[in-house]
Each structure stands twice: as C-alpha cells, then as structure tokens.
Image 1 (cartoon, rainbow, N blue to C red):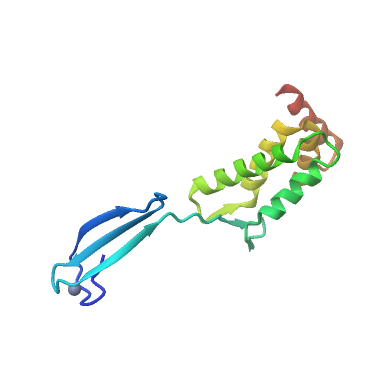
Image 2 (cartoon, rainbow, N blue to C red):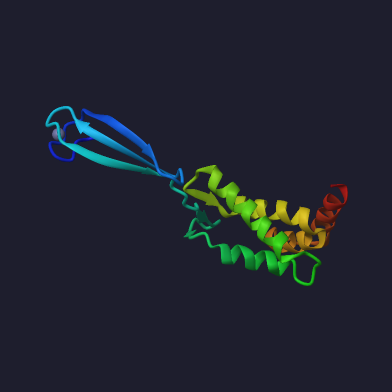
Length: 150
Ligand SMILES: [Zn+2]
C-alpha cells in the first residue's frame, strides 16, 4: 500500500483490528519514509455477476426477474413460496461463490433448471421447453424421459 502523503511504496502495518461483526478489517499503517500514519479498511465485496446473453449483450442480475421466471414455471403447482425463496438463495449463492464478474445466461439457466428439477418435475419441463426452445415433440419427449430417470 502506497503512502498517501509521499507516495512511498514502503508502508508498515502497525495495528490490525477486525470489526465486531467480523466483516471489516481495519489496518493502521505507518510510512517508513515520512513516518505519517493512515488507516485502510478491508471489506468483503459481494457483487452479483453481470449476465451475458447469447447475443453478447449484458444485463444486470435481478432477483425479481429470477423469481418471476421461477413463479411462471411453477404456476398452479404445489410448491411453497418458502421453497422458491430457498431455491433463489441457492442460485444466488452459487453465482456469488463463483467469484466471476460475468456469467453466461446459459449457466444461469442451468442453475434454474437444476433447482426446478428438485422442486417440481412439471415446472422443470415447462421451463426447459421454453428455455431450451424445444423444436419438436421428440425433444420434449427426451426431456420427460430424463426427468423420469432421475
Ligand atoms: Zn510517506
């Protein structure tokens, strides 16, 4: 860390403290050259990755959009709102833990399908048929076969 006063590269950490919540680290530093002191803060950065669509355009990740597409697939199906929220949480955790700044929309789609498969087979088929844009009955039949197997 450079000294903000004389821009010397050589600064020493003289004290380190973790905040009560444990999410911020505060470091007291001293410049080895001009002897001035300053403080730096280290925080956890949790930023959802940007979604890259097939055509290359980028769009901000929105929980609302994800929830809407899950609800659409789950329409009139016996799945609780709580189970949907848990699925959303799991998807978001996976996106966050990837540490990537950008994620392909196809990857997000796969995560959604994995969750729907666990929640409700009918909803899974609904989502997959739109998402994978099945072109004929055989593709549809294949997907149903796949669900039957699992
Ligand atoms: Zn300095």
